[in-house]
Amino acid sequence: AARLRIGIAGYGNLGRGVVAAVDRCADMELVGIFTRRDPAQVTPPRADVPVLPWDQLLEHREDIDVLVLCGGSKEDLPEHGPALAAHFTTVDSFDTHAKIPAYYGAVDDAARAGGHTAIISVGWDPGMFSLNRLLGEALLPDGETYTFWGKGLSQGHSDAVRRVAGVAGGVQYTVPSEEAIDAVRSGRRPELTTRQKHRRECYVVLEEGADAAAVERAIVTMPDYFADYDTTVSFISAEELARDHAAMPHGGFVIRSGSTGAGSSQVVEYRLELGSNPEFTASVLVAYARAAARLHAAGQVGAKTVFDVPPGLLSPKPADQLRAELL
Ligand code: NDP
Image (cartoon, rainbow, N blue to C red; front, side, top):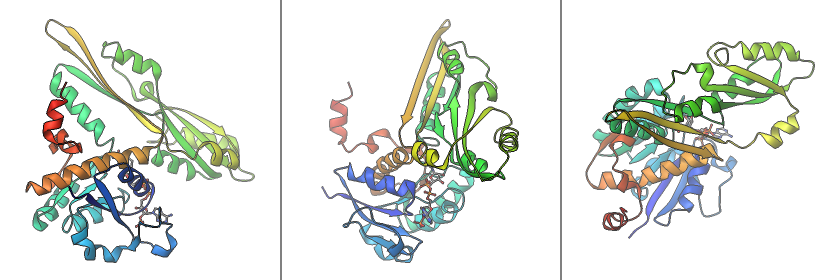
């Protein structure tokens, strides 16, 4: 069978992860990477993968089966999602929670008008965690769902730390509470406050002459970001920041704790422990790219989410083989 031809729109952390993920899929090949920057300024992953200017995207409509959108959720995808779904079958990782319904509507209109298929908000959260929350609730209607994140680097909270006056650099890790997770796993269905579920660890490089105590106070009392959590601030050197905090680990847990029958306790857990958040997110995007191509081939146009995709379509294996491997 012909290999699935993948294009990448936007080349940041996620874009690099998509290259690595496609390389591990025997049924796929990379057509090229499209960037809004000057392609000459962007280092290609390999000699055989061209980096091309964004305005050449439409010229490649016929050689790309699925375009993986790797722009940021805040500024890029609200524009790229609908504009590109009009011309390509797409997958993206749009994760601005409150705006997903409006984004779905805009992408759906564009995809239907162009006769394309677009799977939006793919990744781990939203994405695999959403799917596992849905399964837990559907299978155990009498129950409670718990999501814990971390230990992981949070981009938004790291940005907030770096905006504090006197901070030269820094990162923030979200850390789930072991006691809270144990209480949930016990099946007791505890009621947990924000503070009881997660704490926040900041590693900060000070600007020369900055007041450490003032910086720490500004961070731990910051509303919305840190004030509702137990937050620790550790001061480190620029060398330590570069050496020890460059990886982007993340992960978490979705746990459904419910009861059936006369009160039998049923606890279901899905756990991720990710050495690289963008590389895992990209791996999920690439599996859903396979499904997007198959949905499109079956005439299912418009916007979809992970809830609309049968899991068999994610697998490179044919349906009869999957049936033989059911047990
Ligand atoms: P990046 O900031 O690394 O990349 C976003 C875009 O910025 C790129 O597509 C690229 O576009 C541009 N860019 C990247 N590097 C540079 C640079 N050096 N100079 C100028 N521009 C650059 O974001 P990520 O790849 O880490 O994440 C993308 C989105 O994925 C996030 O916004 C997040 O919302 C989402 N995400 C979703 C997850 C989920 O579970 N659903 C999990 C993780 C992330 P161009 O090449 O055109 O310049």
